[in-house]
Image 1 (cartoon, rainbow, N blue to C red):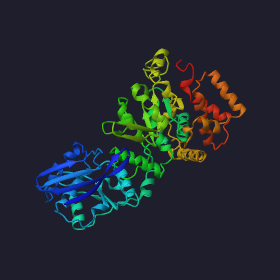
Image 2: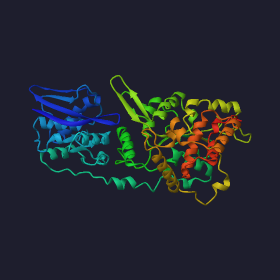
Image 3: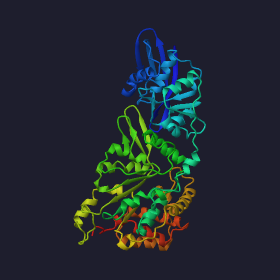
Image 4: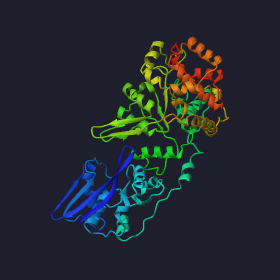
Length: 513
């Protein structure tokens, strides 16, 4: 008897339907074909134990199991349940009263028949709906994540016995339903990290607000204990709320990486990723024998924070250059290519010298100007060229630290940021690849960053006196456009230009003393 059961394989952030064909013939043997990896080849041991512990068995007959399309590599343990149900029906141990062809079935089996969570439940559910399947049967731990997809019936099950009884005895399964709107906005008004907790640093908070409003990459330079990490961790709390499309995009990436198993459901807040400086190239951009998304993709629609930037290997930093420009990363292998989205805000922090302090004779550890320049030179010019805002962070004085009064909340700042982003969304409505000011190219800069005579003269004077580099010119125009948007000003004025000039510290000649 021949039976067909349907599962799904995930490549990149997209899924493809896999047909599992089980044929029973005369003889003895268990033959699994269709380019399975080791985890799938070992499934027969898990399946045999799970069936035996639930009153069934793999019969002593010749079983041929084909995973179609046969020339596509399959990996992972999520096909255990698919294969087991195919074997039971093909060997007529159960009757198929509910049609198998209506469902995608996925799940990893424990030896007692309980199900373990799988990766990629959301892209699989999206693909199941697109391919016209009625429902998706999967482990209960992944059910909330898959139930995000409207129009698809999702059944979260705890063991293979529930699935057997559903197909054999028509005992109904409990459908998983998610109130997407309630879940989406539940955490919106309660950020874990709030700018109200930051004492002093008003000028840096202003700088972070500008960066969030225009999507600008930013680097913070300051001595230890000045609050660089504290400020960076609070940046996601002032970014505009995720749209539903962005939330689904972000959840898909984390689902493929297996990072939504504990949380379940849709991601409601923007991701904040902070890898250690010992990270490898592959871990940052993604890859491996079976490519997985890296940190830059896990930070998609959120923030990637690189603390102590000069401590990262130069090769690691250089591989970020292309994703920072193209906002995606393509990983190529001999037989296939996958592309992961990587549209993130880069926030970096660093000490100004190996000792950690500015060229200050009163500092605990001093460094010469040559030491400082050598330390900073670990970061390449092309990478700095992709960072719009450079800001110096100074230690907070005791008077500010001891104040009882709290600062402005993240919710209040986020309201201004959201209004500025709305202006940019309307401005770039006709541009497919430009959505906010940081993404502007030369064409958009010339169109939307026109200066009057006085502003142009101010910018010219600043570049000559401060000896700013040529790359600073476009960056200053982009940032000044964002500052104008925060004030709902159509025209960029001298005030906007003068503030933007302050945010190019590393371009100033003599910054090292």
